[in-house]
Image (cartoon, rainbow, N blue to C red; front, side):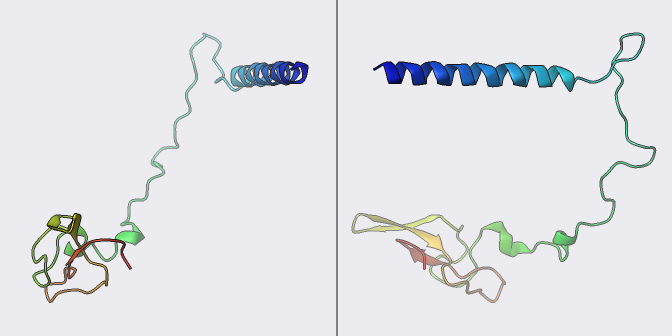
Length: 119
């Protein structure tokens, strides 16, 4: 029992010590103030915003309709939404999924009325 109490006191002292040291470093990192007491704020150099002005590389080519979440015109869930409930049988729910990465002629995924884990 004495060992448990000693460990509890030790943990408390470690916690309070870390909180005290964290508060002292936070005050050291405070921004510098000018002679009149106002806070001096840093601003970026003229004309430099840090943001790229050209197109982002990961958006070339532009996204297509495949990413809208709709099934294609073929398959069991033609025109449905991916994840949409499409059936119930034997106490299990079925949803529109595209487990085989097949695509219809319109470029959208071929969906199946699926239940259970995906392959």
